[in-house]
Image (cartoon, rainbow, N blue to C red):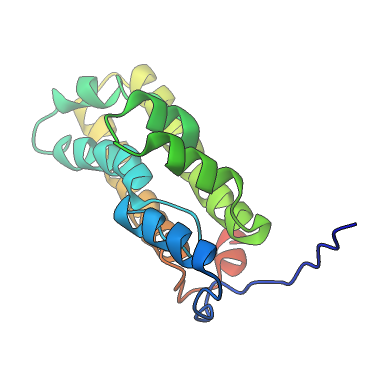
Length: 170
């Protein structure tokens, strides 16, 4: 019988170095694929949100970019990697699925918030009749989403300086 003890991992504290050759090999494999071995998450997923933010940032000066933003569709972590050319996509998805539940919950809450904001703004832009209204929506969405992208990056890198729960409760 195998006993599996669980310990709570805090993402804001450094993890001890891997202790076995398997742990070290796994960490190296993840690092080589640009996946954080402490969190099991890859920053590549944030490109999905950064693309939307980039398009929104262009809307005030180039209103036609609103149409480009409206083609953005939400993708889950796994969907993003399946649709990408990321070389280690299977590894990225597997690492995400086996990530510490607390870290993954913090990350999922942030990405769900970003998706919700971007989806709502897209819906509002579709209803808007004036470029000025779309520009205002784009500016507001950018101001909301950019800090969440930064927080998600902190979670991915295991060094979130801000308490995610406090931010999400506001």
